[in-house]
Length: 591
Image (cartoon, rainbow, N blue to C red; front, side, top):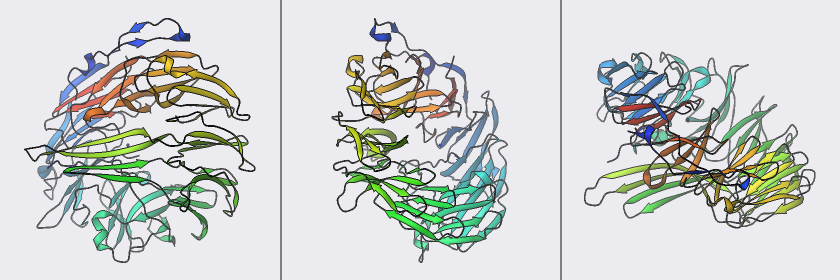
């Protein structure tokens, strides 16, 4: 059976990758003649080895000064130069002889971070231990916290790291415990909050936390009288300042395990986005008002021995808050239509509702700009997919994890609503099979495209400023857009094309860069990701010219859940780390 590794990044190997060649680049500045260029090459800073096989965790901390590789029973840590800092077996490092730790968390920090080990005992008491990644020493261990691991081997929902306090919240049947991350010292426990922390907002000035709970999978059977709780709590001693009941059920994203919920404090109000919007008084926790509507996130499963789980997210735009109003994309439960509503922030009173939009699966973007509200109907959704395949004849299974953007065939368009009345000032429906995300420029211009054309409109009047025939760039249909200074870069099926915001003039186009389905902007560096056919390829891109700096194709396990198996990237985007079994390669992005 394929084993799962559990990774947490505190708020997210390739041999010869540095010598890979790639296609051609076509420069079409101003639509002029083309000039072929070869792909650049990433430079390898160093190659090194772990003392063990890094098939559980293979990650770096934020700046790459600590590189961690673990298997079930041991760990190795290297420094920024690839030299070994320490290695050892968990059973020898831990004083409670924690050994077979298939379930592991890595909590990143610039000082190395924490390695959190779980050892489930079938005929005894579960063990946990926390190691200092910098030194390899055991910080603390405990057998006081039981039933933390779900029986199906899924993610550990009963433990939440509170970055602002450098502490763990550990949910148990009888309540919630706050524990110092470095010492394991219990700061406090409360019997008044049951379940795991689903979302929290930390108030540093008052040293208070507003948070809500959910029923963790591992402890679900132990909770009989579970109720949804939204609380304001004193972080110093665990005193519950107020306790309120919220409506709805919290889901978590399939792979990244981010809760599909939002908690925000605006003025003296707490806003909870979950199956609608619920507003509470920050001082006493009383519910002030709410607007109920469905969340149309979907999941599906496969058949005939091949199990597939798919979660679709980002189908509804996040609420927009101003000093006196909030704007919502509503999914109607009766008519199944979507529309925009503007509510008074203080009372929740409906100020206006837009026309109903039928046939729209997603309305992912909403912008307040001047006296207009811009609405995107249709567009990319986020897909997280876990596919498990059984090999014929062997009984072995392999599991692939994918995070990518996709388009759903639906009615597409953009609406410009009058902010005072909600009436449609103008609309455009020149989008046949897809619509890219909107890019708003200086509150005056909106840029948006379909697969083959790219448009610019005046936000106030709706006047079309230009229409670019994107298909002439010969890079395939548009799949995404990137706001890049004075230009808009269109990520397409076969490459990139960049257009000037001023007049739509093409700056460049690439050819034969196919399959990229996700992009990242990290510290001003841009990366494209190709996940087709169970592979994981990361490209570095110069968005000024469209040139490819280099590529890394993963052949390893571990890696960050954000970037996929075998790959991790530093927070400044300057270095890529590629992992393969014992080997690790440090790669420089900018030569």
